[in-house]
Image (cartoon, rainbow, N blue to C red; front, side):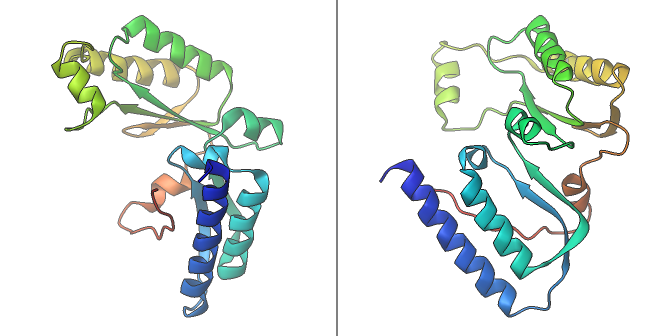
Length: 193
């Protein structure tokens, strides 16, 4: 089945599921809607609209609701002011100077929030197999620590507040989605295919 058709079917299923779950509960105020994990960035605007409409119908949305979508250039083009960029460092063959260039390019895009994560090599993945066969060289812990410190120093020197271990924000742009995790279990809808 083509990806577009699969996306439409999955969204239709999730919208029905959302409506069923919210029809039996007292409506509560939602302060954050997060589209993440890579795949939402290729959803068409009409599919994103269907999801947001279902959220609006199923929940009480805060007047200051934060809606996060992982697609910086598209978000800027259509007028979003608050834009986050997620970065991964410690990718095999990545050097400290490569990481510095990546950070500088992202800073030049002027996002309001940047998250930096160290790559985790999971057991049983193709990347792990390639490392074990010697086809890729894993970045060492010391070099990853240097990359983390470089990100922290460079981003804070460019006006980003380092407010959580992996998160940096311009003044007034801390990610509410990240802050919601402190002591609370977020409610999420979705599935993997």
